[in-house]
Length: 295
Image 1 (cartoon, rainbow, N blue to C red):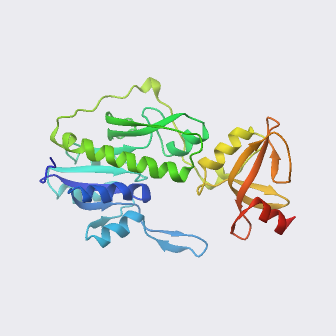
Image 2: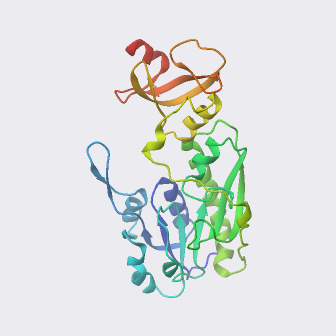
Image 3: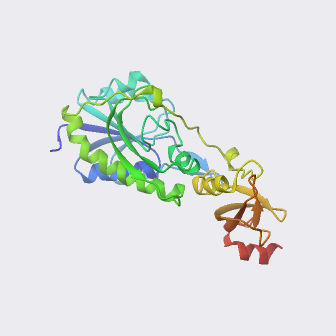
């Protein structure tokens, strides 16, 4: 049963976070504040863009806090009393220990990997790029270390080998939310205690940037290149020069022979056959359409 006296402060930023926030509220939890990143300029026009969770929170009369430094909101958290809990999903900032201590039983984090594997900011992209067979979601108690906190529970997800960053994010966001909602009552009443991670099994992934978008076929096998395209779909994307044009590859397959200029030879001698792409015009087109327009 939900503890109706438990107040929740939600930390999150993007669409991945939004799925959990909506389900927390839909399950009857009292979310009194949403902590998210400050609004940023985005796109070619440098328009001010607000985080996905902010728009939802404002539309639902939930207070929004957007600190540059998380410790700036410590007084606001303290004012909520001693029975406030925190839930964090894809927030994008490290939480200092001084802030974590203000919550009871702490801050509960939804992390899209089978911790201690793939600690860090890009676990979804990393499992696709590395050709893993399984991944999952961990519900853990946040600590000041990078994804080092003890684990309340996990759910395993089998990978098919055709996932993209886009659809795997949605799958794990849904799975993580359901797992959190299932475990949260027992976490809040103390009947579940988290289990310490084995640091000897830990692996890490890095923050991805626009500089990671280059599709270096001279350094990658065809299999590795195809995985990168799926892993980096939407961001940071996979860019390559074809026929003197810089394109973004959105879909490809592996081939043993070259049938067109859209089949590029990789490090292992196999070919990456480009199926779909974003042209220099910004339009999503097929490889055939690209050849017709640019060859």
